[in-house]
Image (tube, rainbow, N blue to C red):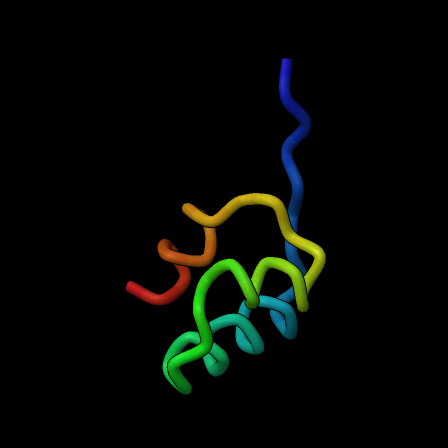
Length: 45
């Protein structure tokens, strides 16, 4: 069974800002120590 990870609001907002600035998703994941690219896409919808 997988573990559910809850990200702080600040991390989510940083990811959204980076995405709208044109930073690739893979680079965002590395910068924010995340493993789930789908989550970043969900935050930026």
